[in-house]
Amino acid sequence: MNHELRTPLTIMKLAILMLKQAEQPAASRAKYLDILEQKCFKEIALIEDLLALKQFETQQVPISLLQINLKHLIQDLALDFEQTWADKGLTLKVDLPNPLSALETDGSSLNRILLELLTNAGKYSASGTAVVLDVSLVAGYFVLTVSNFGRGISAADLPHIFEKFRRGIGITGQAIPGTGLGLTLVKYLVQHLNGSIDVDSRPSESSEGDQLWLTSFTLTLPQVQG
Image (cartoon, rainbow, N blue to C red; front, top):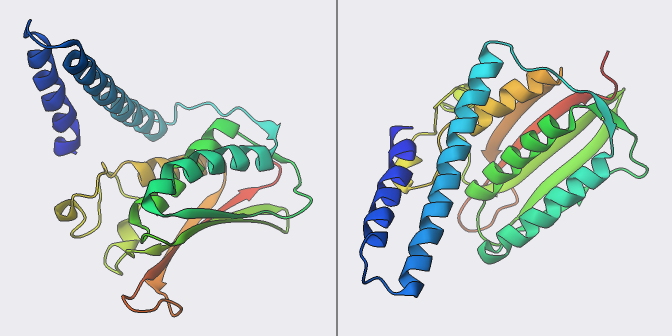
């Protein structure tokens, strides 16, 4: 966490120093301004996550329930991730029931949950594989599962996966970016929606060559909030 907070600030300070040099050509100034903007957005997002966690921990977050079109929400997310993952050689497969019933929930919270789960799946997926988002309706509950093939979650890490600032063994050493806040936010957001979330990670029997793990996060939400 210390690293994630300090690194953008250090880069921003260096960019400011370079911008103060009067002889900088226009192209260089534009580059350093872009760096400042990117790192500023990253720092703001991190601070907002910390503030959101504080609100959840003190139970100060109101819930706004509306009937949402889950299909549209997922399709919009899928389009963004397909473009983001193109360079990594990842694809996103979405499996939705037809027809898809209406869901009464807090749309912004659900969007953030899926955003975090898909981001996490893409981060640990092996190149050339597919991330799968599966949706089903079971006994009045929506069941949404995000699965990926790649680096798995060890048995030692699995019970702690939703803990604040907790990252898997060896993750930091491999320079995989992250703060250990994303899945903690997911946990609180799921509770906020009166739902539940489970995670499973194990070696995949279908992988060839280097063994890949199949990791699945399964989100269960009531179709109508009671």
